[in-house]
Image (tube, rainbow, N blue to C red; front, side, top):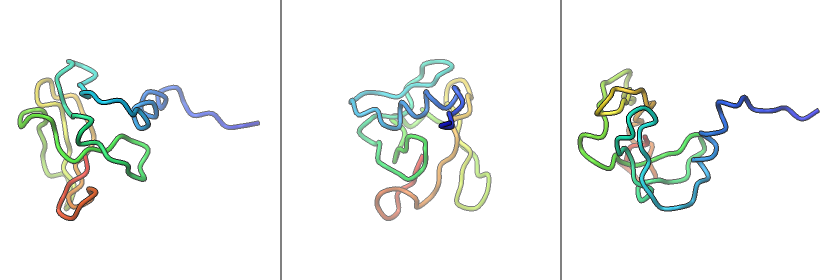
Length: 95
């Protein structure tokens, strides 16, 4: 019998392969976070971006060497991490 992914993984998977242009917003307050222009393919199961759409779109603090904990800049909703030097080009981050 094939294994199934939990339902809470479906929305994430949908946005990993979402090819349309647009703006990714906070699931809690709808604030603009990332543009599809900064999205890139990565081996992780989550959407990956090189930069936020606005300077105040995110807030972050150093969680460990090379990784910042990232939250929505408006409401504080947890978004994951920024990984330093893990973007598509040398010196770019991956959100």
